[in-house]
Amino acid sequence: MPEGDVVWLTARRLHDALASRVMRVAELRVPRFATADLTGRRVNEVIPRGKHLLTRIEGGLTLHTHLRMDGEWHLYRAGTRPRGGPAWQIRALLGNDAWLAVGYRLGIVELLRTEDEARAVGHLGPDLLGPDWDLAEAVRRLSADAERPIGEALLDQRNLAGIGNLYKSEVLFLRGVSPWRPVGGVTELPPTVEYARRLLHANKEGPGQVTTGVARRGESTWVYGRAGRPCRRCGSPIERAAQGGEPYERVTFWCPHCQT
Image (tube, rainbow, N blue to C red; front, side, top):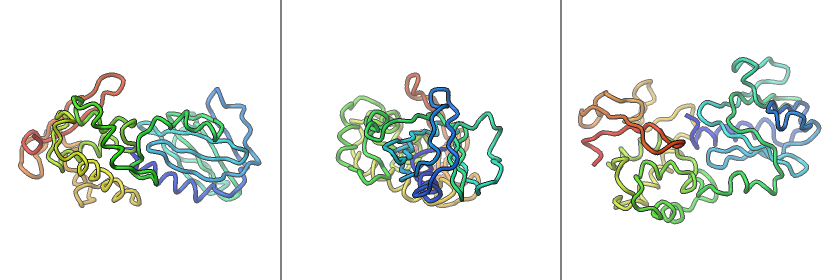
């Protein structure tokens, strides 16, 4: 899932391929920005902000993209034909003399002035993998609505940026907290939030998302994606249910015995 760790690694790879190089190819295949001409401009940097990607371009421009549920950026050597999916799924192409970056199924593609980036990401809370990480501020934001279920509150990017459904389910299991428990009833909220940050940091360099310490397929998570299967700790069947109102409803996984 493209959560904060996946976006962090994507940003680093894009930065290594594009930064300080002049674009020879620059296509934004969305109606609003289809005529934008970025060729000949240098990419200054690519940085992550929670689940958002900001590609800062010479001349005070920023390409803001978001992977949503199934978006991806693929990198190819210049002159290589993209193979990440059908051409109609391509939303952006950025290329230089060495590399071609191809964005497939991107949920957001917009071009804005760099000075206006706050319009796109200014609402986000502290970034779990960012230089602005502030545990106290994240806890303050979460605690502002004490009656909200902790599973919903952790996914609200206005509280803290980067955590998604997988890590939300996993960290709450590891802390023994039901996703339905109100935020005000989580007695050790700071350690719970810090645990989420540790999980993202542990996976940001790697190809997978592992919370159990075992990378083998089918063994990498405690509860996520394991509905109906026995809990790895107590043997109780893992449960699954929708949580949150539209349009923010997400499926959550938990052990009813281990998570009170």
